[in-house]
Length: 178
Length: 353
Image 1 (cartoon, rainbow over the protein chains, first blue to last red):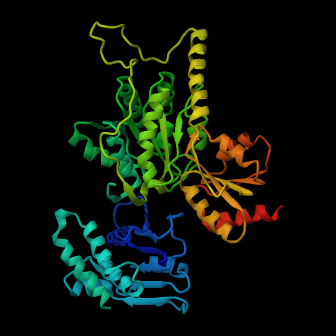
Image 2: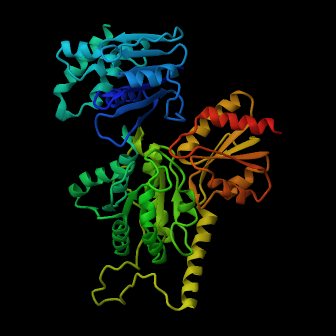
Protein backbone atom coordinates (compact mmCIF):
# COMPACT_ATOMS: atom_id res chain seq x y z
CA UNK A 1 0.00 0.00 0.00
CA UNK A 2 1.28 3.40 -0.93
CA UNK A 3 1.76 6.17 1.57
CA UNK A 4 -1.11 8.61 2.02
CA UNK A 5 -0.55 12.18 0.95
CA UNK A 6 -2.07 14.74 3.29
CA UNK A 7 -1.15 18.06 1.78
CA UNK A 8 -1.82 21.61 2.88
CA UNK A 9 -1.22 24.40 0.38
CA UNK A 10 -1.38 27.90 1.80
CA UNK A 11 -0.71 31.47 0.74
CA UNK A 12 -2.44 34.52 -0.68
CA UNK A 13 -5.51 34.30 -2.88
CA UNK A 14 -4.34 34.51 -6.49
CA UNK A 15 -1.12 32.51 -6.01
CA UNK A 16 -2.77 29.47 -7.51
CA UNK A 17 -2.74 27.27 -4.45
CA UNK A 18 -6.23 25.89 -4.99
CA UNK A 19 -5.23 25.14 -8.58
CA UNK A 20 -2.03 23.35 -7.58
CA UNK A 21 -4.12 21.36 -5.11
CA UNK A 22 -6.53 20.41 -7.85
CA UNK A 23 -3.68 19.20 -10.07
CA UNK A 24 -2.44 17.02 -7.20
CA UNK A 25 -5.93 15.64 -6.62
CA UNK A 26 -6.46 14.87 -10.30
CA UNK A 27 -3.05 13.16 -10.46
CA UNK A 28 -4.23 10.88 -7.64
CA UNK A 29 -7.52 10.28 -9.42
CA UNK A 30 -5.63 9.25 -12.58
CA UNK A 31 -4.15 6.40 -10.56
CA UNK A 32 -7.55 5.35 -9.27
CA UNK A 33 -6.87 6.44 -5.70
CA UNK A 34 -9.27 8.02 -3.23
CA UNK A 35 -8.90 11.77 -3.15
CA UNK A 36 -10.42 14.87 -1.61
CA UNK A 37 -9.84 18.59 -2.09
CA UNK A 38 -11.17 21.07 0.43
CA UNK A 39 -10.68 24.82 0.22
CA UNK A 40 -10.67 27.01 3.26
CA UNK A 41 -12.59 30.00 2.15
CA UNK A 42 -13.01 33.54 3.39
CA UNK A 43 -15.68 35.98 2.28
CA UNK A 44 -13.36 37.77 -0.16
CA UNK A 45 -12.78 36.81 -3.78
CA UNK A 46 -9.16 38.00 -4.04
CA UNK A 47 -6.27 39.10 -1.89
CA UNK A 48 -7.16 37.27 1.29
CA UNK A 49 -5.45 34.17 2.59
CA UNK A 50 -6.23 30.98 0.74
CA UNK A 51 -5.45 27.46 1.69
CA UNK A 52 -6.61 24.04 0.78
CA UNK A 53 -6.32 20.48 2.01
CA UNK A 54 -5.71 17.62 -0.40
CA UNK A 55 -5.84 13.95 0.60
CA UNK A 56 -4.69 11.10 -1.62
CA UNK A 57 -5.08 7.63 -0.20
CA UNK A 58 -5.83 4.00 -0.98
CA UNK A 59 -8.54 4.04 1.69
CA UNK A 60 -11.80 6.05 1.68
CA UNK A 61 -11.07 9.50 3.07
CA UNK A 62 -12.65 10.37 6.41
CA UNK A 63 -12.07 13.98 7.26
CA UNK A 64 -11.03 15.99 4.20
CA UNK A 65 -9.67 18.68 6.51
CA UNK A 66 -5.93 18.09 6.94
CA UNK A 67 -4.82 19.06 10.45
CA UNK A 68 -1.46 17.25 10.48
CA UNK A 69 -0.07 17.39 6.95
CA UNK A 70 2.79 15.20 5.81
CA UNK A 71 3.37 17.79 3.10
CA UNK A 72 3.10 21.57 3.24
CA UNK A 73 3.46 24.20 0.54
CA UNK A 74 3.65 27.66 2.11
CA UNK A 75 3.74 30.72 -0.12
CA UNK A 76 3.50 33.59 2.34
CA UNK A 77 4.61 34.44 5.86
CA UNK A 78 1.22 34.18 7.63
CA UNK A 79 0.72 30.72 6.11
CA UNK A 80 4.23 29.64 7.04
CA UNK A 81 3.71 30.79 10.63
CA UNK A 82 0.31 29.14 10.83
CA UNK A 83 1.17 25.74 9.40
CA UNK A 84 4.89 24.98 9.85
CA UNK A 85 4.38 23.52 13.33
CA UNK A 86 1.48 21.35 12.17
CA UNK A 87 3.65 19.31 9.78
CA UNK A 88 3.95 15.71 10.94
CA UNK A 89 7.43 14.58 12.01
CA UNK A 90 9.11 13.15 8.94
CA UNK A 91 6.97 15.30 6.67
CA UNK A 92 8.04 17.66 3.92
CA UNK A 93 7.69 21.45 4.02
CA UNK A 94 8.19 23.51 0.88
CA UNK A 95 8.57 27.21 1.42
CA UNK A 96 8.62 29.88 -1.26
CA UNK A 97 11.75 31.69 -0.07
CA UNK A 98 11.05 34.70 -2.29
CA UNK A 99 8.02 35.36 -0.10
CA UNK A 100 9.18 33.97 3.26
CA UNK A 101 12.57 34.83 4.71
CA UNK A 102 12.22 32.67 7.83
CA UNK A 103 13.73 29.24 8.22
CA UNK A 104 12.30 26.58 10.50
CA UNK A 105 14.29 25.36 13.48
CA UNK A 106 12.53 22.01 13.34
CA UNK A 107 14.91 19.11 12.72
CA UNK A 108 12.19 16.43 12.54
CA UNK A 109 10.86 17.57 9.16
CA UNK A 110 12.43 17.93 5.73
CA UNK A 111 12.21 21.62 4.88
CA UNK A 112 13.10 22.99 1.46
CA UNK A 113 13.38 26.67 0.64
CA UNK A 114 12.78 27.31 -3.03
CA UNK A 115 12.70 30.87 -4.41
CA UNK A 116 9.79 29.82 -6.56
CA UNK A 117 8.33 33.27 -7.27
CA UNK A 118 11.76 34.57 -8.41
CA UNK A 119 12.42 31.42 -10.49
CA UNK A 120 9.04 31.79 -12.15
CA UNK A 121 9.63 35.47 -12.96
CA UNK A 122 13.11 34.77 -14.36
CA UNK A 123 11.78 32.02 -16.60
CA UNK A 124 8.97 34.21 -17.93
CA UNK A 125 6.45 32.09 -16.06
CA UNK A 126 4.92 34.76 -13.88
CA UNK A 127 2.23 33.33 -11.63
CA UNK A 128 3.46 29.75 -11.90
CA UNK A 129 5.47 29.61 -8.67
CA UNK A 130 2.72 27.31 -7.42
CA UNK A 131 3.51 24.72 -10.09
CA UNK A 132 7.27 25.04 -9.52
CA UNK A 133 6.67 24.14 -5.87
CA UNK A 134 4.42 21.28 -6.92
CA UNK A 135 7.23 19.95 -9.14
CA UNK A 136 9.60 20.09 -6.20
CA UNK A 137 7.07 18.34 -3.97
CA UNK A 138 6.75 15.57 -6.53
CA UNK A 139 10.53 15.21 -6.68
CA UNK A 140 10.76 14.87 -2.91
CA UNK A 141 7.72 12.66 -2.32
CA UNK A 142 6.93 10.99 -5.64
CA UNK A 143 3.26 10.88 -4.67
CA UNK A 144 2.23 9.59 -8.10
CA UNK A 145 3.73 8.41 -11.38
CA UNK A 146 5.15 11.11 -13.69
CA UNK A 147 2.47 10.25 -16.25
CA UNK A 148 -0.32 10.75 -13.71
CA UNK A 149 1.13 14.13 -12.77
CA UNK A 150 1.16 15.22 -16.41
CA UNK A 151 -2.38 13.96 -16.93
CA UNK A 152 -3.51 15.74 -13.77
CA UNK A 153 -2.15 18.96 -15.20
CA UNK A 154 -3.92 18.39 -18.53
CA UNK A 155 -7.22 17.74 -16.73
CA UNK A 156 -7.02 21.05 -14.88
CA UNK A 157 -6.31 23.25 -17.88
CA UNK A 158 -9.40 23.81 -20.00
CA UNK A 159 -9.16 23.56 -23.79
CA UNK A 160 -9.75 27.32 -24.03
CA UNK A 161 -6.44 27.89 -22.22
CA UNK A 162 -4.43 25.19 -24.00
CA UNK A 163 -1.47 27.57 -24.41
CA UNK A 164 -1.04 27.50 -20.64
CA UNK A 165 -0.31 23.78 -20.65
CA UNK A 166 3.20 24.12 -22.05
CA UNK A 167 4.04 26.89 -19.58
CA UNK A 168 2.78 24.78 -16.69
CA UNK A 169 4.89 21.85 -17.89
CA UNK A 170 7.95 24.09 -17.95
CA UNK A 171 7.21 25.26 -14.41
CA UNK A 172 6.78 21.69 -13.23
CA UNK A 173 10.18 20.80 -14.72
CA UNK A 174 11.89 23.77 -13.07
CA UNK A 175 10.54 22.54 -9.75
CA UNK A 176 11.72 19.00 -10.38
CA UNK A 177 15.21 20.32 -11.14
CA UNK A 178 15.55 22.09 -7.80
CA UNK B 1 -19.13 3.04 -16.12
CA UNK B 2 -18.95 6.72 -16.82
CA UNK B 3 -15.73 8.57 -16.10
CA UNK B 4 -15.05 9.92 -12.64
CA UNK B 5 -14.66 13.67 -12.57
CA UNK B 6 -13.59 16.01 -9.81
CA UNK B 7 -16.38 18.35 -8.81
CA UNK B 8 -17.40 20.48 -5.89
CA UNK B 9 -20.39 19.10 -4.02
CA UNK B 10 -22.47 22.15 -4.85
CA UNK B 11 -21.77 21.91 -8.58
CA UNK B 12 -22.26 18.15 -8.74
CA UNK B 13 -25.61 18.54 -7.00
CA UNK B 14 -26.69 21.17 -9.51
CA UNK B 15 -25.73 19.00 -12.47
CA UNK B 16 -27.51 16.02 -10.91
CA UNK B 17 -30.69 18.05 -10.41
CA UNK B 18 -30.75 18.95 -14.09
CA UNK B 19 -30.16 15.28 -14.99
CA UNK B 20 -33.08 14.42 -12.68
CA UNK B 21 -35.34 16.54 -14.87
CA UNK B 22 -35.41 19.61 -12.67
CA UNK B 23 -35.50 22.50 -15.12
CA UNK B 24 -36.81 25.15 -12.76
CA UNK B 25 -34.55 26.75 -10.18
CA UNK B 26 -35.41 29.75 -8.04
CA UNK B 27 -33.00 31.13 -5.48
CA UNK B 28 -31.15 33.90 -3.80
CA UNK B 29 -27.35 33.83 -3.35
CA UNK B 30 -25.71 32.96 -0.04
CA UNK B 31 -22.36 31.47 0.96
CA UNK B 32 -21.48 28.56 1.11
CA UNK B 33 -24.15 27.54 -1.38
CA UNK B 34 -23.38 30.02 -4.16
CA UNK B 35 -21.66 27.65 -6.63
CA UNK B 36 -24.90 25.73 -6.90
CA UNK B 37 -26.93 28.72 -8.02
CA UNK B 38 -24.06 29.94 -10.21
CA UNK B 39 -23.95 26.57 -11.97
CA UNK B 40 -27.69 26.72 -12.56
CA UNK B 41 -27.43 30.27 -13.88
CA UNK B 42 -24.96 29.09 -16.51
CA UNK B 43 -26.62 25.84 -17.44
CA UNK B 44 -30.39 26.42 -17.30
CA UNK B 45 -30.61 28.88 -20.21
CA UNK B 46 -28.69 26.39 -22.40
CA UNK B 47 -31.24 23.63 -21.86
CA UNK B 48 -34.33 25.81 -22.05
CA UNK B 49 -34.88 25.72 -18.31
CA UNK B 50 -35.61 28.48 -15.85
CA UNK B 51 -33.00 30.01 -13.61
CA UNK B 52 -34.43 32.86 -11.65
CA UNK B 53 -32.63 34.88 -9.01
CA UNK B 54 -35.49 36.28 -7.01
CA UNK B 55 -35.47 39.40 -4.87
CA UNK B 56 -35.39 37.35 -1.68
CA UNK B 57 -35.63 33.88 -0.21
CA UNK B 58 -39.34 34.46 0.46
CA UNK B 59 -39.95 35.08 -3.20
CA UNK B 60 -37.78 32.12 -4.23
CA UNK B 61 -39.64 29.56 -2.18
CA UNK B 62 -43.03 30.83 -3.32
CA UNK B 63 -41.89 30.53 -6.93
CA UNK B 64 -40.90 26.94 -6.17
CA UNK B 65 -44.40 26.47 -4.74
CA UNK B 66 -45.94 27.79 -7.93
CA UNK B 67 -43.81 25.65 -10.22
CA UNK B 68 -44.39 22.54 -8.10
CA UNK B 69 -48.15 23.19 -8.20
CA UNK B 70 -47.91 23.06 -11.98
CA UNK B 71 -46.46 19.58 -11.62
CA UNK B 72 -42.85 20.17 -12.71
CA UNK B 73 -39.73 19.29 -10.80
CA UNK B 74 -38.63 22.51 -9.12
CA UNK B 75 -36.02 23.40 -6.55
CA UNK B 76 -34.27 26.05 -4.55
CA UNK B 77 -31.02 26.07 -2.63
CA UNK B 78 -29.86 28.21 0.23
CA UNK B 79 -27.86 28.20 3.41
CA UNK B 80 -29.05 28.44 7.00
CA UNK B 81 -30.18 32.10 7.35
CA UNK B 82 -31.86 31.84 3.96
CA UNK B 83 -33.68 28.69 4.99
CA UNK B 84 -35.13 30.51 7.98
CA UNK B 85 -36.64 33.02 5.57
CA UNK B 86 -38.14 30.20 3.52
CA UNK B 87 -39.91 28.40 6.32
CA UNK B 88 -43.26 30.08 5.80
CA UNK B 89 -43.31 29.00 2.14
CA UNK B 90 -42.18 25.49 3.03
CA UNK B 91 -45.07 25.18 5.49
CA UNK B 92 -47.46 26.28 2.73
CA UNK B 93 -45.97 23.69 0.38
CA UNK B 94 -46.44 20.97 2.99
CA UNK B 95 -50.01 22.22 3.45
CA UNK B 96 -50.55 21.97 -0.30
CA UNK B 97 -48.95 18.49 -0.47
CA UNK B 98 -46.41 19.69 -3.03
CA UNK B 99 -43.20 17.82 -3.79
CA UNK B 100 -40.10 19.92 -4.50
CA UNK B 101 -36.43 19.93 -3.61
CA UNK B 102 -35.01 22.30 -1.02
CA UNK B 103 -31.25 22.29 -0.48
CA UNK B 104 -29.73 23.60 2.74
CA UNK B 105 -25.94 23.91 2.64
CA UNK B 106 -25.66 24.64 6.33
CA UNK B 107 -23.40 27.26 7.87
CA UNK B 108 -22.83 28.41 11.43
CA UNK B 109 -25.62 30.17 13.30
CA UNK B 110 -27.70 31.56 14.90
CA UNK B 111 -28.31 34.88 13.19
CA UNK B 112 -25.89 35.67 10.41
CA UNK B 113 -23.54 33.30 12.24
CA UNK B 114 -20.60 32.49 10.01
CA UNK B 115 -19.85 30.98 6.63
CA UNK B 116 -18.09 27.80 7.76
CA UNK B 117 -19.74 24.35 7.85
CA UNK B 118 -22.29 23.50 10.52
CA UNK B 119 -25.04 21.01 11.36
CA UNK B 120 -26.96 23.24 13.71
CA UNK B 121 -30.17 23.31 11.63
CA UNK B 122 -31.17 19.74 12.53
CA UNK B 123 -34.09 20.76 14.71
CA UNK B 124 -35.27 23.12 11.99
CA UNK B 125 -35.06 20.44 9.29
CA UNK B 126 -36.68 17.62 11.25
CA UNK B 127 -38.91 19.20 13.90
CA UNK B 128 -40.15 22.63 12.90
CA UNK B 129 -39.34 23.86 9.42
CA UNK B 130 -42.35 26.14 9.72
CA UNK B 131 -45.66 26.43 11.50
CA UNK B 132 -48.20 23.64 11.73
CA UNK B 133 -48.15 19.85 11.84
CA UNK B 134 -45.89 18.65 9.06
CA UNK B 135 -42.68 16.88 8.12
CA UNK B 136 -40.23 16.97 5.26
CA UNK B 137 -38.29 14.09 3.79
CA UNK B 138 -34.74 14.99 4.88
CA UNK B 139 -31.74 13.31 3.26
CA UNK B 140 -28.20 13.77 4.57
CA UNK B 141 -25.38 13.15 2.08
CA UNK B 142 -21.86 12.48 3.31
CA UNK B 143 -19.94 12.45 0.03
CA UNK B 144 -20.06 14.38 -3.22
CA UNK B 145 -21.33 11.21 -4.91
CA UNK B 146 -24.23 11.12 -2.48
CA UNK B 147 -24.97 14.78 -3.20
CA UNK B 148 -25.63 13.53 -6.73
CA UNK B 149 -27.44 10.29 -5.97
CA UNK B 150 -29.70 11.76 -3.31
CA UNK B 151 -31.07 14.41 -5.64
CA UNK B 152 -32.84 11.64 -7.53
CA UNK B 153 -33.99 10.00 -4.32
CA UNK B 154 -35.26 13.30 -2.93
CA UNK B 155 -37.43 13.96 -5.99
CA UNK B 156 -38.69 10.37 -6.07
CA UNK B 157 -39.61 10.23 -2.37
CA UNK B 158 -41.08 13.72 -2.46
CA UNK B 159 -43.34 12.75 -5.35
CA UNK B 160 -44.23 9.37 -3.88
CA UNK B 161 -45.39 10.88 -0.57
CA UNK B 162 -46.32 14.33 -1.91
CA UNK B 163 -43.94 16.02 0.50
CA UNK B 164 -41.27 18.67 0.04
CA UNK B 165 -37.87 16.99 0.34
CA UNK B 166 -34.75 18.55 1.76
CA UNK B 167 -31.17 17.76 0.87
CA UNK B 168 -29.44 18.48 4.14
CA UNK B 169 -25.85 19.34 3.31
CA UNK B 170 -23.23 21.62 4.83
CA UNK B 171 -20.43 23.94 3.81
CA UNK B 172 -17.84 21.19 3.93
CA UNK B 173 -19.66 18.89 1.51
CA UNK B 174 -20.70 21.80 -0.67
CA UNK B 175 -17.20 23.18 -1.05
CA UNK B 176 -15.08 20.04 -1.22
CA UNK B 177 -14.16 18.25 -4.43
CA UNK B 178 -14.24 14.49 -4.70
CA UNK B 179 -14.36 12.12 -7.64
CA UNK B 180 -17.92 11.67 -8.77
CA UNK B 181 -19.72 9.75 -11.48
CA UNK B 182 -22.47 11.86 -12.96
CA UNK B 183 -25.72 10.17 -13.91
CA UNK B 184 -26.59 9.34 -17.47
CA UNK B 185 -29.45 11.55 -18.63
CA UNK B 186 -32.76 9.85 -19.22
CA UNK B 187 -33.10 7.62 -16.18
CA UNK B 188 -35.86 9.54 -14.42
CA UNK B 189 -38.45 7.85 -12.27
CA UNK B 190 -41.39 10.12 -11.88
CA UNK B 191 -45.08 9.67 -11.16
CA UNK B 192 -48.37 10.85 -12.61
CA UNK B 193 -49.52 14.09 -11.02
CA UNK B 194 -53.29 14.21 -11.54
CA UNK B 195 -53.47 16.98 -8.93
CA UNK B 196 -51.27 19.39 -10.88
CA UNK B 197 -52.76 22.69 -12.03
CA UNK B 198 -51.94 22.47 -15.71
CA UNK B 199 -55.09 23.82 -17.34
CA UNK B 200 -58.11 21.54 -17.69
CA UNK B 201 -59.22 22.62 -21.17
CA UNK B 202 -62.84 22.13 -20.11
CA UNK B 203 -62.27 18.37 -20.10
CA UNK B 204 -62.09 17.72 -16.37
CA UNK B 205 -62.94 19.38 -13.08
CA UNK B 206 -60.38 22.02 -12.28
CA UNK B 207 -57.68 21.27 -9.70
CA UNK B 208 -57.08 23.50 -6.72
CA UNK B 209 -53.76 23.72 -4.87
CA UNK B 210 -54.41 25.35 -1.55
CA UNK B 211 -53.51 25.12 2.13
CA UNK B 212 -56.47 27.04 3.56
CA UNK B 213 -59.20 25.03 5.32
CA UNK B 214 -61.57 27.19 7.33
CA UNK B 215 -63.58 24.21 8.56
CA UNK B 216 -61.56 22.75 11.45
CA UNK B 217 -62.90 19.23 10.97
CA UNK B 218 -61.88 19.31 7.34
CA UNK B 219 -58.40 20.58 8.24
CA UNK B 220 -58.06 17.86 10.88
CA UNK B 221 -59.04 15.18 8.37
CA UNK B 222 -56.57 16.55 5.84
CA UNK B 223 -53.72 16.63 8.37
CA UNK B 224 -54.57 13.14 9.60
CA UNK B 225 -54.55 11.77 6.07
CA UNK B 226 -51.17 13.45 5.53
CA UNK B 227 -49.84 11.84 8.72
CA UNK B 228 -50.83 8.43 7.42
CA UNK B 229 -48.47 9.03 4.54
CA UNK B 230 -45.80 10.17 7.00
CA UNK B 231 -46.30 6.97 8.99
CA UNK B 232 -45.90 4.94 5.82
CA UNK B 233 -42.65 6.79 5.06
CA UNK B 234 -41.45 6.11 8.61
CA UNK B 235 -42.21 2.40 8.18
CA UNK B 236 -40.59 1.96 4.79
CA UNK B 237 -38.08 4.70 4.06
CA UNK B 238 -35.65 4.67 6.99
CA UNK B 239 -32.17 4.53 5.53
CA UNK B 240 -28.78 4.38 7.17
CA UNK B 241 -25.31 2.97 6.67
CA UNK B 242 -23.75 0.78 9.33
CA UNK B 243 -19.98 0.61 9.76
CA UNK B 244 -18.58 -2.05 12.10
CA UNK B 245 -21.81 -2.07 14.10
CA UNK B 246 -22.34 -5.86 14.28
CA UNK B 247 -20.32 -6.46 17.46
CA UNK B 248 -19.90 -2.84 18.55
CA UNK B 249 -20.06 -1.94 22.22
CA UNK B 250 -19.91 1.78 21.62
CA UNK B 251 -22.05 2.93 18.71
CA UNK B 252 -21.50 6.36 17.26
CA UNK B 253 -24.36 8.07 15.46
CA UNK B 254 -23.42 10.80 13.01
CA UNK B 255 -24.64 12.07 9.65
CA UNK B 256 -23.15 14.12 6.83
CA UNK B 257 -19.70 15.66 7.30
CA UNK B 258 -19.34 14.56 10.92
CA UNK B 259 -19.98 10.93 9.94
CA UNK B 260 -16.79 10.99 7.86
CA UNK B 261 -14.79 12.10 10.87
CA UNK B 262 -16.46 9.44 13.03
CA UNK B 263 -15.60 6.75 10.52
CA UNK B 264 -11.91 7.62 10.87
CA UNK B 265 -12.26 7.66 14.67
CA UNK B 266 -14.00 4.25 14.68
CA UNK B 267 -11.25 2.75 12.49
CA UNK B 268 -8.55 4.01 14.87
CA UNK B 269 -10.53 2.85 17.92
CA UNK B 270 -10.77 -0.66 16.43
CA UNK B 271 -7.00 -0.68 15.83
CA UNK B 272 -6.62 0.05 19.53
CA UNK B 273 -8.92 -2.79 20.51
CA UNK B 274 -12.02 -0.75 21.28
CA UNK B 275 -15.21 -2.20 19.80
CA UNK B 276 -16.66 0.92 18.24
CA UNK B 277 -19.10 1.20 15.36
CA UNK B 278 -20.98 3.87 13.44
CA UNK B 279 -24.59 4.26 12.39
CA UNK B 280 -24.84 6.96 9.74
CA UNK B 281 -28.41 8.15 9.18
CA UNK B 282 -29.00 8.73 5.47
CA UNK B 283 -32.59 9.79 6.09
CA UNK B 284 -32.60 12.03 9.17
CA UNK B 285 -36.36 12.16 8.63
CA UNK B 286 -37.60 9.48 8.79
CA UNK B 287 -34.96 8.83 11.45
CA UNK B 288 -33.50 5.29 11.38
CA UNK B 289 -35.00 4.24 14.72
CA UNK B 290 -35.01 0.56 13.78
CA UNK B 291 -31.24 0.41 13.24
CA UNK B 292 -30.57 2.22 16.53
CA UNK B 293 -32.87 -0.10 18.44
CA UNK B 294 -31.33 -3.16 16.83
CA UNK B 295 -27.82 -2.00 17.79
CA UNK B 296 -28.98 -1.56 21.39
CA UNK B 297 -29.17 -5.35 21.69
CA UNK B 298 -25.36 -5.51 21.89
CA UNK B 299 -24.16 -1.95 22.31
CA UNK B 300 -23.45 -0.67 25.80
CA UNK B 301 -23.54 3.02 24.95
CA UNK B 302 -24.29 5.43 22.14
CA UNK B 303 -22.46 8.61 21.18
CA UNK B 304 -24.03 11.23 18.94
CA UNK B 305 -21.43 13.38 17.18
CA UNK B 306 -22.62 16.57 15.51
CA UNK B 307 -21.43 19.96 14.36
CA UNK B 308 -23.95 21.54 16.74
CA UNK B 309 -24.59 21.83 20.47
CA UNK B 310 -26.57 18.58 20.39
CA UNK B 311 -29.76 18.20 18.38
CA UNK B 312 -29.89 14.78 16.71
CA UNK B 313 -28.87 13.29 20.06
CA UNK B 314 -32.53 13.80 21.09
CA UNK B 315 -33.67 11.46 18.32
CA UNK B 316 -31.11 8.87 19.36
CA UNK B 317 -32.45 9.08 22.92
CA UNK B 318 -36.05 8.83 21.71
CA UNK B 319 -35.18 5.76 19.65
CA UNK B 320 -33.46 4.13 22.63
CA UNK B 321 -36.16 5.19 25.08
CA UNK B 322 -33.74 4.97 27.99
CA UNK B 323 -32.46 1.51 27.08
CA UNK B 324 -28.81 2.62 26.87
CA UNK B 325 -26.83 5.64 28.03
CA UNK B 326 -26.41 8.18 25.25
CA UNK B 327 -23.58 10.67 25.12
CA UNK B 328 -22.96 13.69 22.95
CA UNK B 329 -19.91 15.32 21.45
CA UNK B 330 -20.07 18.34 19.21
CA UNK B 331 -18.30 21.40 17.85
CA UNK B 332 -20.26 24.34 16.60
CA UNK B 333 -20.02 27.75 14.96
CA UNK B 334 -18.15 26.43 11.93
CA UNK B 335 -15.62 24.33 13.84
CA UNK B 336 -15.09 20.81 12.52
CA UNK B 337 -14.39 18.06 15.07
CA UNK B 338 -11.16 16.14 14.50
CA UNK B 339 -10.98 12.34 14.49
CA UNK B 340 -8.65 12.59 17.51
CA UNK B 341 -11.25 14.52 19.53
CA UNK B 342 -13.92 11.94 18.73
CA UNK B 343 -11.55 9.09 19.62
CA UNK B 344 -10.94 10.78 22.95
CA UNK B 345 -14.71 10.77 23.62
CA UNK B 346 -14.92 7.10 22.69
CA UNK B 347 -12.13 6.34 25.15
CA UNK B 348 -13.84 8.32 27.91
CA UNK B 349 -16.99 6.23 27.47
CA UNK B 350 -14.94 3.02 27.33
CA UNK B 351 -13.09 3.85 30.55
CA UNK B 352 -16.18 5.11 32.32
CA UNK B 353 -17.54 1.57 32.40
